[in-house]
Image 1 (tube, rainbow, N blue to C red):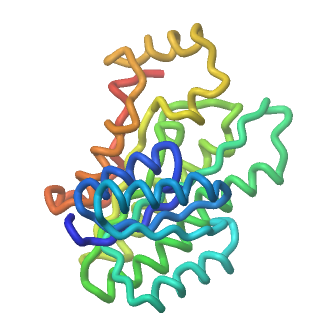
Image 2 (cartoon, rainbow, N blue to C red):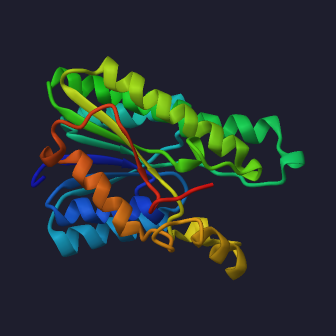
Image 3 (cartoon, helix red, strand yellow):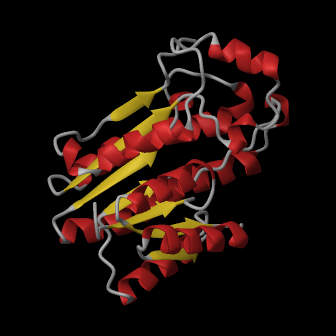
Length: 247
């Protein structure tokens, strides 16, 4: 992965940050897309440059805006940057009681998690296809497969759609670009753990064969593997990473 270039959406915090740092440790140049937290993005950029001596770029982009996505891609093209890896990590989750769900919340979630991912993947994927090389990994969730949470019904629907999107992108960009998805179960990220009490966490851990939530690094390791040449014959797959979980 040394000297390759990776674009990571939502790459400045949470799981995205862990993915970004792991890629940088491998000698990969990173382009970090973020939306709101300028401070975190700037700090991460500085850390990567100082610790790992690789190029780190940050770009602010609202993935619900096609205009901003187009502007971001144009900026990359103007700098003659060849993207080798794309990680579609950014996602919006607006948990609320089922009765309180609104069309506005539902549509916003789909705009970011599905439409935004589609737009970025189409533009970057076309660039990869022209270069006859590239790998895309989408970050899905078991919520889109076999875990159901009415409080997250819009998020769950978006992840199910993302799985379908993964299959279609793999077909569209074959044979030059591999497209896979990782579908984690519970991961100990700041966002996921917020608001969960110990009793609920324990009850969810009991459903997992390994009896614990995943560490961010464990999920990042799977993503790095799928991006790398070590997985050169894995394509069009949704890889569940849930520690062996049952409903």
